[in-house]
Image (cartoon, rainbow, N blue to C red):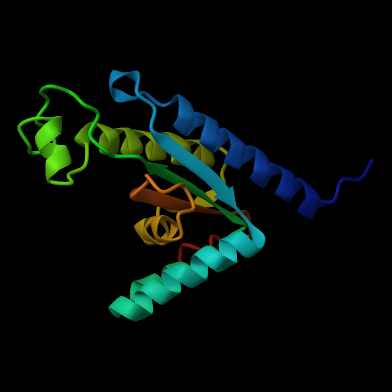
Length: 175
């Protein structure tokens, strides 16, 4: 039987994206509270995200946003991982810089535990892509655009994007 390489690459891409999302979901979370949100975008949805990254770059005169938007368009797809970083209601923690969660909430702060959980989830996800030899990068620019477009829900205000590419040459290398 003859299997077309393009078809197999598409299957591999979906399998890797699924495994990345599983790794992020099962990554350790502070106090066992899972506030991680994820989605995988391809095609038109990926292109809409790239357009928003480009728009933000133009609006804020940041040329590297344009570079990232072009990389997102060239990528086969992009995994978005974000977190609901509202305070958790602890009586005391202080990692966010406030006395307690009530003070953090009052000042519209963000939970340091949730942000740490996001970093661990992103690290777990990219390790899966690396183990599968799928080219990837972590883009905060894509996360900003995803938040602006509410790709991960209204309560997610911190996110990262991980574009994935399966090509003969790493599209992220000569940036």
